[in-house]
Image (cartoon, rainbow, N blue to C red):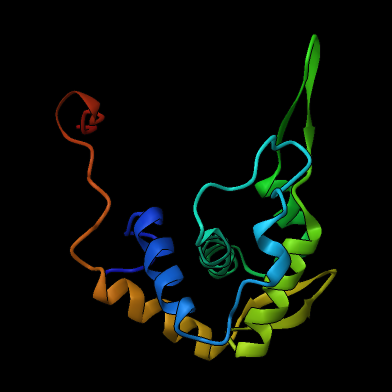
Length: 156
C-alpha cells in the first residue's frame, strides 16, 4: 500500500489544490493583492497560489500532528533581503495561514485539539480519507529509490 510518505510532496500538494478548488475553500478578494510574507518582494505569480498553500498546509498537518499557526509561519518564512546588511529570517504572514486553517476547519478536514501541552490542528477522519484517496489516485508517482552511485552499500 502506498502512503503519503512514499509519494512526492509536489504531486500530493498539486492534487490536493485541484480538489480543494472544487470545495468551499475559496481565495478571498484580498488574496490577489498580498505578499505571502514580509520577506517576499513580489506577489505570488501563480493565480492559484491560495489553493497550493492550502494543499501544502493540509499535507503538513497530516504528517506533523498538532500544528499551530506559529509553527506554520516558521515553516513558510524566509530570509529577508536587507540590502547591504545581512539578511534575517522573517516569519510568513499569519493572516493567510489562519484564514486557510479556518476554511479547512469549516470544510471538516481538520479539527482543533490539545494533546498534553501541545495544541493545534490535526486531521479529522474526513481529512485523512481525503488525503489517502489523493495518494491512492496518484500511486504511480512514488518517490524514486536511490540507485547506483547514490545508494549506500549494504552492510554485510
